[in-house]
Image (cartoon, rainbow, N blue to C red; front, side, top):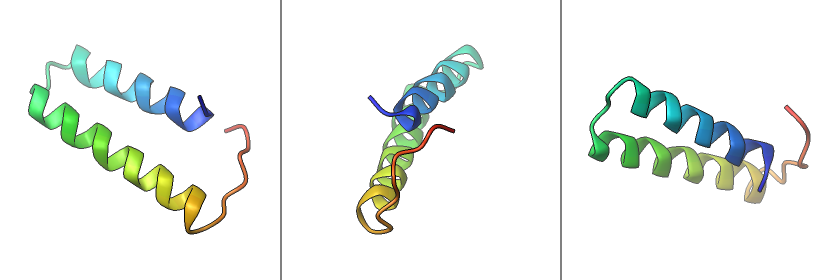
Length: 50
């Protein structure tokens, strides 16, 4: 699990605490995971602590 994964989990927890709809939360999580994958694969981002 990367630092990015941990931060996504924290963000999703905050979304749940705010009462966002399940569909919205799934969309947000999917979008964030795609963005992180883009950074690691296409931009060759080296894993670093945030």
